[in-house]
Length: 190
Image (tube, rainbow, N blue to C red; front, side, top):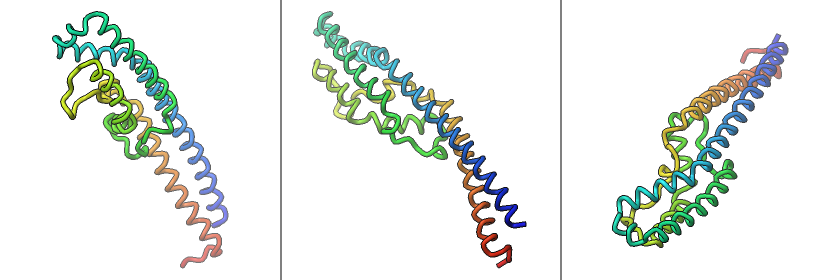
């Protein structure tokens, strides 16, 4: 009887492992889609940020004049293209939280923040500073200026489903381990 139970739990475990792997693959595809979306929108988001900063510092924007503003926009576009390329290849470099730790878009934002800040966004801030824009010592371009930090709901849902698949797999593994050990003891109760 124990041998039959062990075979059943082993089959169940294998089925759950496959389901978990499919969920994990789906979450990774979704992460890549979000990175692609951020990368595609990055030049426009950075240009919008530059315009807002110019509106906040109109005297400086006037001093730059049309040629200076155009040069700034060209430099930012180049930097945005470079960062977009990095983002497209960053899936394995981003410190993503475990599926069970993704409870809101803020958790995804936190992972992206950890990848982009300080170095990558500080290089964008440096472009503005080199053109004479003023920032307080603790200010500058932030990751959330480059994407919608609340727009990761779909990834949160899929991560939750992956976390549930992980829990089911772990429970099935424990049941299979139990049955395996029982079969080694010949079904005797200890």
